[in-house]
Image (cartoon, rainbow, N blue to C red):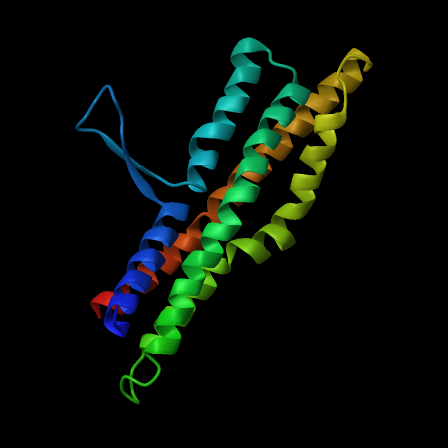
Length: 191
């Protein structure tokens, strides 16, 4: 393979990896003509955590169970998404490095570098803005609801639901970072 092939592969990995992290088009089984835009990260905020809240409302699921279910979802994402973001960003960084000598006035290295940085933005966003909420929710997974009096249990339920709401919002924002990376990468490819 020549360098052209590697560049094409890097473009495909960069844009599709960033898009997969953030956005994918889903068709519902019942209505094939209806489509929703959701992604690996954003789907958690648009589908998973609202379903957890619904199970509290509709089925009276204990809030500590909701926190445990959230932790299973969180732990899968924590294992899966950072490597995908790293590979995606690596592809964009490779493209930035490979295009640095195309023309002196070329914006391609800046665009590809920006796409990589945007995609990797999920990591500092998580560490700086979500770590506190994550830690509090994780602490609730170890606690038992059985030993609390009704007033304390209601307070705990409210806190867990509030934390899930906060996490849902922050996670939806986090899902925009790879979307921005995909759009910038696509602009570089098509520009």
